[in-house]
Image (tube, rainbow, N blue to C red):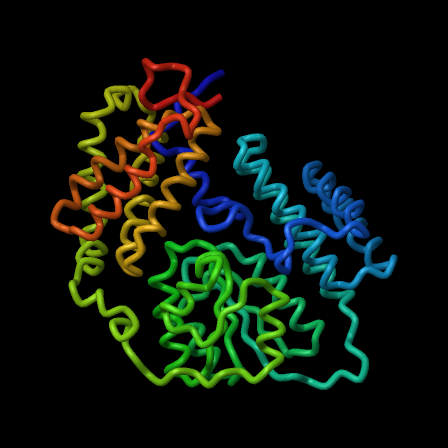
Length: 397
């Protein structure tokens, strides 16, 4: 049975997955490496088979066997568990596994990490190194990288408060006042969360606690961590543990977002955020006129299309916030690749971009970013096309 795909239905799926994003193809931290070392390759393959077979017991047996053979806990976390998650991400991106399968695999990895925490060796002659709060930013649900960092820090002698996914800013600040940690390790995968992350960074610093930023949302070189005024940045869990082992920088004093980002004074970001629901609703109406096939969409397909337009608008808004067209262009290119893997034609995505651009005509920075993304997509040979030219929305098996 075939089912017509919406304008950006796979992008909707992408926003929910825990292993893929436009910022990083997998949300797992591998300590800067791109594959397991030879001595753990067999365990990594066995762990992958356990994940793909959705066997929690087999997955746990694999990692316990690696520990029994003398593999360090850190390497098992990063080179076995994280390696399996990266492979799950690759399979999802290629449309070889479903979102449900990906979620099942991630849930298994989360439970395996929790089980490993009970086997964490206490460092010899351990002396408490201090207290660290590890949390995901408000709206960030990709928690496994933060959990891996928390386990590594705990194994190295830190007292760790792991707060998990989607920690609202006020609750995080209340926790800081109650516990007085030496630093906050703030994790974020999706760059669309950067405005919320910025608010959390400034609030933590106002509370007198320095912020170590990490995760793909901050860019491969940490450019957005610096832009948003984080006190430190690390590209991976091992680097983060080394940063925290050294002198932790004093937090910046109280300041406003516009102090870090003077371009916010033009109010373009503020206005787009205020109008975003209406912009998306109006764009849906215009898209229905441009894509006749939408007349036969099911209510679920229409709902997904509206959500996908909302995600695209969210990324435009975020790119305006940090004033970086490359952020939006990379998101759009990634979305096009995901759609191509699902036989959704490129024109479906460009139609959505066109209608959003029309709705944003009063916002020059936003429209310029959409133009840049459309220019980047200009060569259709870069992407697979639908085999059904009569169906502008493409088809999904």
